[in-house]
Amino acid sequence: MRHKNTHGAIIDAVSNGSFSMLFNSDCLFFGGHFPDNPVVPGVLLLDTIYDNLLKTGMSNIAGIDNARFYKTVLPNEKVIVKINDQPDKVVCTVKNDTGKVLKVSYIKVQ
Image (cartoon, rainbow, N blue to C red; front, side, top):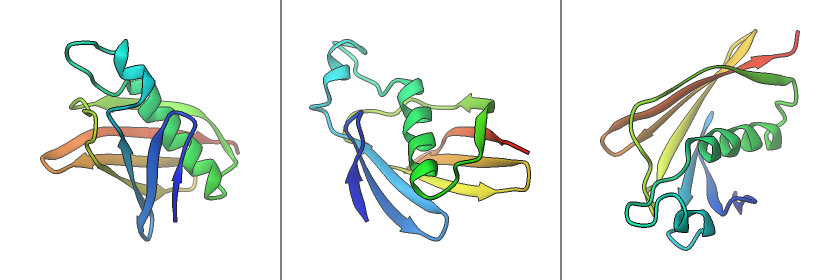
């Protein structure tokens, strides 16, 4: 199911435990981040993932345990988020066509 979130990301379910995100180049934040070399802000990647986890019924997330960024995400670049739901956390690995972009662990409320 495709939907657009408040940041302008287009979200698509891909398969069991994964979804794609794409931020079109017309998203307003690209004007300030950065005008001559636009990239998706890391905080928007993290928030978009969190938002989608809530939409899929994971309402017991308390915060971020760890986040590691490997590459930037550019306008119009589709990335795939793989969700690994564990007993005490949700680990999300984000990849683009060339490899890993981000790995983030969200802590679950016990």
